[in-house]
Image (cartoon, rainbow, N blue to C red; front, side, top):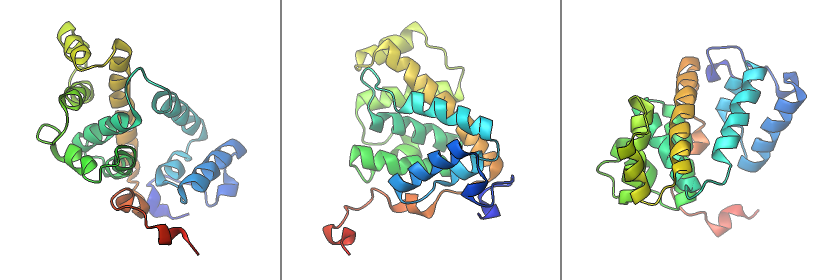
Length: 200
C-alpha cells in the first residue's frame, strides 16, 4: 500500500491486518469497488479503527426520527468544509449527491449553506450543525424551538450534534495523517450512470 495515504505506518497488505478489520475493509471494497483511504489510514491502530467505525455505524446507519441519509451527509459536508477537511468534503459530498440525487447540492453546501438553494429546514439544520461544530454547541431553548418548528424531533437534535462532533474527530484525524480522498469519489453522483457503462 502507498505510504502517501498516511504520514503514519499502514499495513503493507490487507493480509497483515487482524481478520475482523480485513473482512470489514473487503466488505466495503466489494460494495464500493475500491477501498476508501480512510479505512487504511485508521488501520494504523486496530483498536481505534474498531471503535471509530462502531460509533460511525451506530450514528450514521441507525434510523433517525426524521433525519434522512442525505441530510446526515449534508451535515458532514458543511461542517467538514468549515474544518477544511478535503477528504471528508469530497468523500461525503459523493454520498450527498447519491442520496439526494442532486449533482449540485454537495458543492453548494460545502461553499456556503447560507446562500445555497436549500429549504428552511435544511438551513436551520446546518446552522445548528455549525453551532455544534464551531461554537459551544449548547442546545438552548431557542435552538430547540427553531429545530422543532422545521420538523425535527429532540432526538434528531442529538443526531445533528453528534454527527457534527464525530466528524470533527474524523476531520482532525484525516488532516493529521495527511490522507487524500480517493479519486473515485470526485465523480460519484455527478452524472447519471450510462446503461451501457455497466455492460461488458
